[in-house]
Length: 135
Image 1 (tube, rainbow, N blue to C red):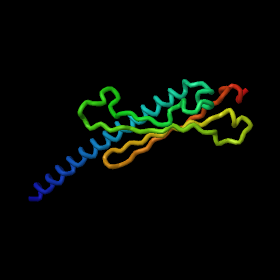
Image 2: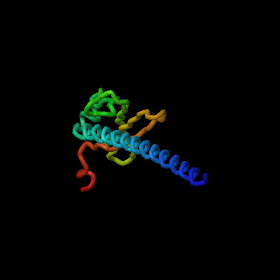
Image 3: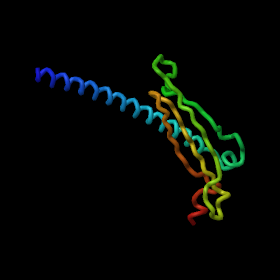
C-alpha cells in the first residue's frame, strides 16, 4: 500500500511538472515574439529621419497590431494578437540640446491565459546624431 501511494504521488508530481514546463515554454515563446515585434518596430523608427520623427505628426503610426504567428496567421491554432502603441515625446532632460532630442517609447500588450502581459522599449532620436554632443 505504501509503495502504491508513493508511486501515485510521484506520478502526480511528474505530470504536474510536465504541465508547468509546457506553461513556461508557452510564456517564453510569447515573450520572444513580443521582443521580435518590439525590435522590428524600433528598427522601422530608426530608419526615419529627424523631420519624419519629430516634425511630421502622424508619420510614425501611434498604434499597431501583430499576430502571434507571423508567418501563418490563420493556421487554425489559438492565435492571439499583440497590440501596441508608439509614443514620440520630448526627451526628459534639461540640457541645452533638449530641443534636438526626442524619446520614442514602444509598448506592447497581449492577453494569454487570462493574464494581460506588457513589454516596452524606449530609445532616443537626436537631430544631429551623437557626434555633435560628444566632440
